[in-house]
Length: 476
Ligand code: ADP
Ligand code: MG
Image 1 (cartoon, rainbow, N blue to C red):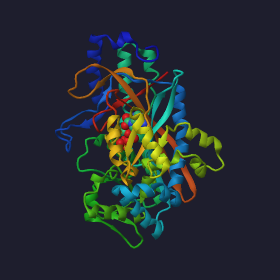
Image 2 (image 1 turned 90 degrees about the horizontal axis):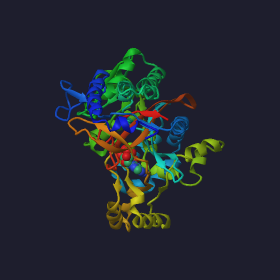
Image 3 (image 1 turned 45 degrees about the vertical axis):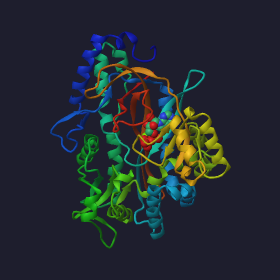
Image 4 (image 1 turned 45 degrees about the horizontal axis):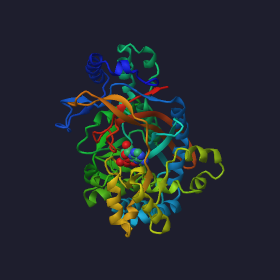
């Protein structure tokens, strides 16, 4: 491999074994940690977060392209969130069949009717890409999705570059070690949270992390929390159930939880149907949306990140709606779109069905879900579409071209797994942060990146799902 880690290193079994032990110790030293499967609620015993032994080659031009388009994606998401006509039209067919999206949408409608009580908007998102292997041998950056809620691993990704640098040095690859980029999304995400907190204007108020009862990835949150504490901003961690029990709004719609005023609600959960397992929890989400706390994300921004919206954006003319006088911005964003196809009822959707049934291996079928492991591939696409093609059920999905990155060799280090050379593919994420106050964009930046790598045999699933592992780009 001319462009990454040389074969003489990858194939040197003795060296690899030593490096793998060293890599795990180094991960622990640097705090790249996770709670264990056995004790997911406690930090008494922890393990390293899974990661690759070596960083993975990413061409500089493609990395720069993803970096440069991020502020445009921030604007796009923010503008979609302010366009009720677009959101209503884009999601109409989805909410007719998808209960979860419908419930989110009804909260959105309600707060829209009542009028906004908070004009400060905080967006912390992550746009994910894969490098599609083109026929001319070059790779082209294609967006997988944009996560507008609970985009994770900004904390741990701030600590992984030092592991890979160290491993490369010990392997005698000093030059490569210098091509591992610095990265500190945790500080950038905290900067956004701190700015929103400051603009909210009440010094005693806290930033509230909305969390699950069970959180193996707690250290990822802690990095962001610590950055806030360094700025003397207090943070608390609460579950939806806690907000149900002790949350309230005062007459000015200020949000109080456990008697403390909340300046910013930072959702690190709330993106899956399972997170809303009672009516009270839906009411708690509504109460927070109505409040004058800054929501990260607010309900409109949450909806702007749905897969159905992503597909609608790929229709001709739609990006122009959001950037009417900026054709270059439109081109930059559109260049990152893979083929996306509607399954709405009608001739266009019928064409999509026929295309997918004809060549299922060229596509991914996606429901309106987040968190990994929900997408449908290969022959299963045919099963699902054969059953749903004549009914509204099909509109719960979108169809997307399958991105085919060039596999590279690496070792995936995860607890108790056998050390073996695997054929791997990577997904590059860029963290976007923006704060808007009324019509004034106060900040709009790209604050760092995340590279995740998985075996090319696994079609789906992220780090939390136990499929992908943390990685770093080795710039070539
Ligand atoms: P989720 O919201 O569950 O993270 P994603 O759209 O990110 O949904 O899909 C999950 C995973 O499935 C991705 O991390 C990627 O590995 C794989 N995947 C998704 N879309 C594609 C695609 N178009 N081509 C290839 N792989 C894909
Ligand atoms: Mg994803």
